Image (cartoon, rainbow, N blue to C red):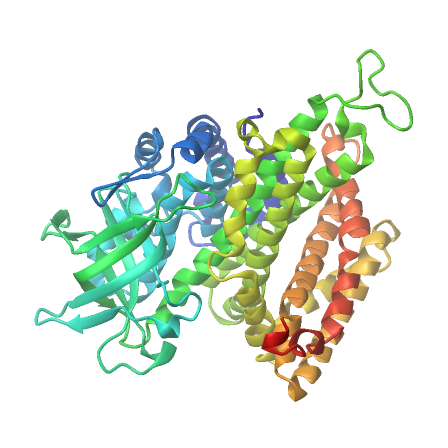
Length: 594
């Protein structure tokens, strides 16, 4: 079985050679502290922690799972000690404001750390990862008293946070939620109701858990316009900011899940629990989008993590596994058979994983830099970053989780029958990956958000923000013969993207169902073009390097880009056909004809 190794060389390529991270950091308030030397030191130490501490716990977490004992959750052996070490090293505070005890480093650096921890052990990483959205929500929408009461402990990591949205009768349709909030004489609220699917909702890693909860006030408007947001701690802080009395929130049960067994997914019961309003009444969903957008990019990173882990495991295995001879003649003549990596179909599976993992890394790191810009600039620069993030977030979340699951399955296929056996860890990776396409809104929901809200409702303006970037890139390289194999198809697809959007928009004017019928295929089409843009840039950068001691690394980039353009990007051809086929073939059957 192969061990996880942090892909530091590829991370450095994406950050510094592709995305100009040093210049990016120099424009941020803490830029002088985010030198390449510091960033590389952070990455190296983070890699050591992930490789040596939490990666060995991944299989243990899967085998042992979490245990529910008298309403309390006990995490797998080693999880608590690893979390304590994580907190003592100061990792949770790295990218949070100095005002609340953070180190003030860029959000984008935290994204890299999240990739490392998530690939090493996704179940463990969720305990600390979900706190991030809770902190952002309180930082942007909480009162000064709430910030003082909760943020410092959350930033330090001794407290963790959750998001409590879903109820048994409503999944994505939060307008149906029934959890109620009633005002109390001291200005707080009594929260009553049940939430399901709450990741890290109860555990023994931290001394307190801060729940961000959606609930409905009395006489609130129906639907999503009548939802308010509350902070509900497991333990109420005392006057000195330490944990005080236990609040009336408890874990009713643990969900029995397909994967991520090491993370507790809870039913949480709020029995007149004391909560505190965050933001204006009946505007909770607006505030919660701060949390949800952060979580969606985090889930996109999960797709990358499962693609990377599957690729690493299958690459080692296919180099060592001997079976059959190459069709062109023996490649291992002194052995009884050739390593299976010589076979074209095995290479197809490996290259697909590699292309999605490395391409996904480019997209996520680019988006994380947009988050930095959104947070630390004003005016047109901030507006452009917000628009690009609005467009790219649903693409990243849905496309990378879909391709992450595809990659995890291909890794299992590389192992053949051994992939079905638990000891190799690839079947766990498949099970763990499957949830990512459901988290934070399914692929279908992300697709409706992209095509309906972001593209059509903006009359194409958000899409033009990004297609213009691609257009300018292609124009700048139109006379570069070396790049023609990448630039020409990218330019053609970029033009088609706008035309296809217009086609769907016109069809939807006569039949609104056309949006839902086209949405998922449109999102996947958008994802393939988006990654093509980054792979073209990667190829350009790699082609500019000659005579390097790392020439094999750069040559590999060009060859992987070529594989992506010739083997994966043509999937867009089928997607165009299915998008244009319209809603009729989906909607013509009557219900009793199914």
